[in-house]
Length: 426
Image (cartoon, rainbow, N blue to C red; front, top):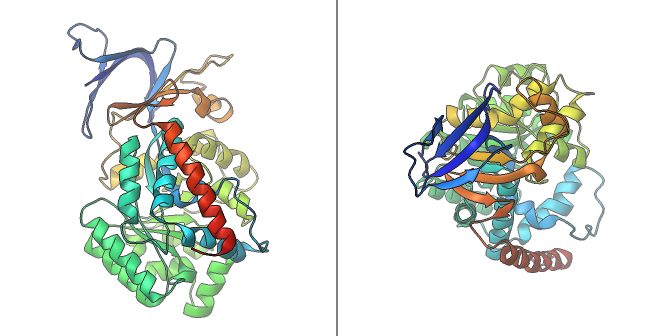
């Protein structure tokens, strides 16, 4: 069934032009969007939403997420307090991901999908890890996302840190998933991926015409390990395996890179994903876009699911460490769409829209939109969200699933997860 957004103010996401119009939204992955001056001849069965005084624009997409962290909010502190980035990974995140089972993955994916939808994102690029429940994990996430109405591009985080057998399982899970679905080849980071596993991942990338999704030089430890063990820097190592040749490749973070690495990235087809708040939380440094080109997009890194918040954080933190302004922060916010379109990934069509009920005390128009984007807009103003032409959020409420039941389920599962983490019994 089509949806008619009547009397809307439409904001073109690419050029920020404003127009008063009626918008007919067709359902389906390839559904169209029509802008109408007149309502004559409209199908009487269309669902009509009055958007008088409301703003409509393309919905958002998350460039880098971690479903597996969804149940971490409020969890007990680790038994041993971490003193550096490596210990943060070992004592917190690697303890958590080893504990995940089927129910925990499902609860995490459902909760993440709901949070993304309510924050206006209808597409998520996720980087998953569950070393003791690898086989079938991506299908669990995919089904949960689709149940809520979220489109996706998934990968499993292949790594040698839990042994070669687990690395092989990660490679197998990836290949089995790619046979039937669009996806990427996930790698944790250079310092946990040996030569044999990296070669196999690169071969898999070429076999399925895909890309690598990997954390790159998030901390100096990654570079130090690479120089010591391979006599080269991280981006140089990835480049040697042809990973930068794919426009589907996503390089996460890229904080501790030198001029040569920046040139390699700039002259490549790869995309970078910036995750400001995660970098602040882990105290690993600040992103600097100098010499990296324009293939920069934004993610949340599992910190939350709010892309407007990520864009504003990138702008505010970047004032002291990056060359960023209103325009470039918005461009990075929207660059995920360009990544998806460049690589012909499905699920980010024109019939993915968000409706803002933005009660600003000042006028918002095409001349000052970016000022409102940085200083005014946030997810609380999102009233409706349309994904593939289907209304998945109405008046701020999820329509596709029972949110209360899912959150009750996730709370129960989270307590079980935390108990297991404390007892060190995955």
